[in-house]
Length: 532
Image (cartoon, rainbow, N blue to C red):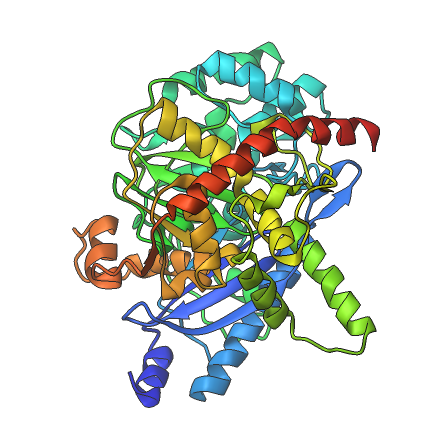
């Protein structure tokens, strides 16, 4: 489209806006009728460690959202010389899980407990046994039950609990709803009814009664919606909250709020059986859409859903690139102290490309990227480590390759369960997130880890914000009967699978050798947690 046509489309509201609150960045993407990004905005933020809890303040949420939207609106004005006033549809997504608990007046009862916390071990274990269904520590229901086990004083006042995306949507629309993908990280979903599993709800209601709480679980959980269903509209109060200048008009429809897992599936068209995607940034998780249910329960595997409710096996790891970022910042400081000013992007690019020159097994080097706990390998706390033996081949290429392997090593442990024990077959894994921004490197190492072709699309850098924008645009589809899967295939991707990297047998063997050493070395991580 020409510049004038795009400007006219923006003025007429023929757009969809997606905003995603990630772990370290809030990002907004405005798309046109052809689903192509027209403008974007962003805001950097970081979680806080306060009183033994990983958290974000609600003030930070709104500061970040307003700043992100302001940058988007400014980007629109600079590129197209029009004010962003009218939007066709809006969607919000965020990191899944965690615990946001409110009383009947909408007041937050306890600080936001994010997905990153590993403080719900007893609750997760007991609920997994009660339901015969894996309940990870980061799930909202585990946080609620742990609060019950702890006898926390706020529980009698609990009126509503939700995720971060559900909270933002509630504030902007007045609707206490949640997309099924995000809801599946709060409480188990029955894919046949596309709602909370009724058997498990009854079992949990018995626990609520046992602890003397008068409400039932469905009283406090958000209503579950699938992609394309009515989730309310942007209210006048919501429009002013998002855009304090008063320029943004209210009344546009809002799609069901989704989690970052669901938006990753949308952004990579990974919603059909035998397809999957992996999001690699601060955390890393892989989603595999199943042909059939798993035969066994595994604590390393979560069962969640696509944005339409189809069953998905999810391998989630708390840690991915944070440790790499620390090392790159150290290198940047060295260069700065020597009088060299290098753009951070260029430094990442050089170091990541250098890793491709490293030995397939990293030359005997070893690292653990555990900034926080990692339930898949049994750690409630983490200690970032770099380890070598006197005869290791310690050079820059091997050093960087080690940290890039380590970033996805725990993910490989979980994925191997699906492949080796459940014989799940996967045709293609779509990659997105910061790990894949350097062409070839992220794909090559991920393909080596899982021994499956890995593809990255040009839109991978847009990530979840683009994915939730697509879910918002789906509300505006011309054919009401068109499924979300059909919409993605026919109107967004048109069969495009992006750039595909096949697994290199030499790298596959090298990664397998590395993971053997990695698992043996977990004893070192255990000792570090106990000693430091």
